[in-house]
Structures are given as structure tokens and as C-alpha cells.
Image 1: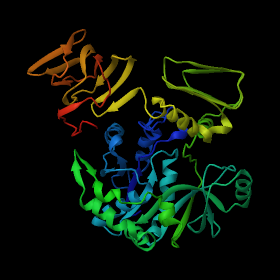
Image 2 (image 1 turned 45 degrees about the vertical axis):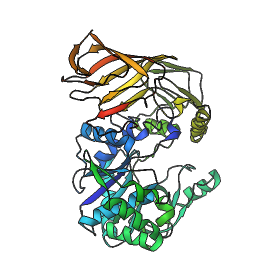
Image 3 (image 1 turned 180 degrees about the vertical axis):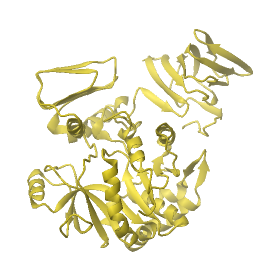
Image 4 (image 1 turned 45 degrees about the horizontal axis):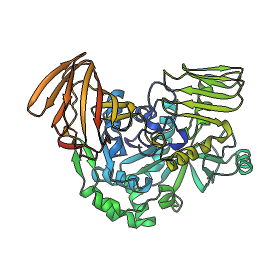
Length: 477
């Protein structure tokens, strides 16, 4: 098999899997179906024999999460590329093709979402190998999933031929209604559109030149003017801002006449809703009554339900439920009819209209040095739990509107306050006055945990003036 460069798309917000998936920490970075996150499982699936080191397309907010999860999985990335702004998949895929073409114009590129579930990695690799020859011959290969039900949540691919091998694509079909989905399932020549593409860099660049030429110059400029930032490749902001926001399907695929489809008949899910999570769990561990629970939930006399709690402090119990989904986190609970799974995004819109922070943000806020969560918040004080990874350090900073009191409850903190540097150990505390220049570091080999009490007239995260930062963040980052 020709060496293939995998490109993982790791942006998006995954609103249909709220409240576990939110804008600040979307579904690809969550462990929804096992011990690994969807992103880690995707990266592992596209690693090993036949694959070059993966390229990851993401945004600035997720860059450290991507790097940390790859490190945890033992996977070294080829490059982590930061898009200055979300512009859908078309410009991101072109940027990846241009990067590969700079080293090898005929190099093969496999573009895949990072939030899909494909349990049989070997079968998927074999399916990719089926398409490699067609891709090397100038075809754009798209992968279709053999449908097992009349699904209305997916787009479809209509095959122009018959058989099991690579076949020409007749056309793309938008998400159908239930009747049409049933007709296509019965016809046998329709596949679910997985949104996974294989092509040579040269072929994709020529496809843009033929069908979407306006992308070529600004995307190339964004690459030419890109700069390295702590190992991440930041695309240039100015040319990227002029790129049209469009999917690869609309920009290129639906216009191209050199598309080939390869069928994948193994288990696959894009986890596009909680009904898909329920179905995936039942495929993995069948239940006579269609009941899916986790360690924090209990079902009594229930049928076809999903009960899930991601908080050890919040137990979910369902009694006499039918076709219901209950998903709980520490700060939000979703209760919905299982048939309304695609409407969960409406809950996000409703909460945003109410300016509820639960719409997009979690209580736990991930940072490159660790994480923090708010334990109590009032008009003039806030209490946080802060966890700092071994060897990590917060920025050297000051605040205009608040003072802080730090109590170490586990590990050791090295604390700078103006010209003083102090080691603060378990059950010791230190005060940071309003306006003092300060920094917190963990010099130890285990995570350091402290409780922070803030007092002041304004307690927002944007009340930070940074003087030094090992992660090269600005005050607003």
C-alpha cells in the first residue's frame, strides 16, 4: 500500500451530543464509547503500517488538547495546523493537500473526521487500501457505509455500478425523509456518506482549480505566511479571513466527475446524536430490553432507554421509562424522547438565548497547564479548584479587579508574588494582593491541587495581564 498521509479534522462543536459535548470541549475529545476519546481512537486507527504521521487541522482553542491527547495515546503528529477561524472543510482540505504537495505532489491524502466510531480498524485499513490504486490514478475516492436501516440523519451516495470493489459515483443525495430512506435501503445501490476522502495531493489541487479556483490564492498565502508557535503551525490570519466558508462537498465533490466510491461494510457511526450512542452501546453489549446505562445510572423496568451520568456525584435512576434518553453532567441534565435525538441542538439554541453558560462551556475549563473548575460564585467572590500538571506553570500575570488567596491541598506549588518566590506545600496558603505580579508553578512529579478564593469587583477570566507565558498566550487566550 502506498504511504498515505492521514488528515484528521478536529474542529466543530457537536451540539447534538449536548450536554457532554459543548463548544469549549466538543465530542471528539470525550470518551463516549470506551476508555479512549473519539479523537484518540481516530488517530490510532490512522496510524501504523501504510500511514505517515497524522496531520491534524484544528483551531487555537483546541491546540493543547490535541497535543495532550496525542501524547497520551503515544502518537507523534506530523503537524498540528491551527486555522485562524472556522471556514468549514473546503479550505482546510485544500491547505492539507498543498502541504503534502510541497513534499510530494503525488502523495496520497486521507481526510477523515476525528469523531467517528469504527471498531474494526484492520477492516477499515483494508478498505482504504482498496481505494489507494484509484486515488493514485487521479480519482477522488469517497467511502460509503453499507446501510442497515432507513436512516434520515445521513447523506447518501448513489452508486453507478454494482459489485463490491471501487465503483463510480452517480450522485450525492441529501438527507432523505423516512419514506425515501426506506426506498434507498431497498434499492441496494445507496450507501451512507461517511465524509471520508482519499486522493492524491495533485488531484485535489486540480479539482479546486477546476471547480473552486477562488480558494487557491488565499489558502496558499495562508500557508506561505504561516509561522510556527510552540510546534504548532499557525496559518496566516489575513488571507484566511478572505476564504469562503463552505464544505468540500459543495465546493468540489458535487461538481467533480472523477469520483470513485469504496464500500465499507463494517460497523461505523458518526455518533451524530444520543440515539447513535445508544445504538453503538447495544451493538457492543446487546440488551434484551434495549437498556443502556453506565456506572452512575440505574434502570428499573425500562425499555429502549439510555441513562448516563458523567458525574460521580449525580446518580440517575429511571423507573418505567420507554424510549427516553437521560444524560447528566455536573451542571446540566438532558431528558428527551429517543426519537427526538436530532433536536438536541435546539436545547443549545434555547440556552444560548437565555445566556446560560451551560450552552457552550463546562464548569471544568481546560488549559495547557492543567484545568480549573468553579466551586462557588457570587457577586464579589469566586472559589475554584485548580489542578496543575507536573512541571507546568501558569503565566506571570496580574489582575486589575481582584485579589486571590491560594490554599494547596495536594502537592507543592512554587509561587511568585512580585519579587518573592515561596514553596507552598499541602495545607499551607499564600495571599496574592490586588495588582501583584504573580505566577504559580508545579515543580513536583505529581499533579498539584489547590483551592483559589478570589475577591473583587470583577471576576471574569479576561481580567488577566500577562507578562510572560511558556505557552505564548495573549491576555485574551
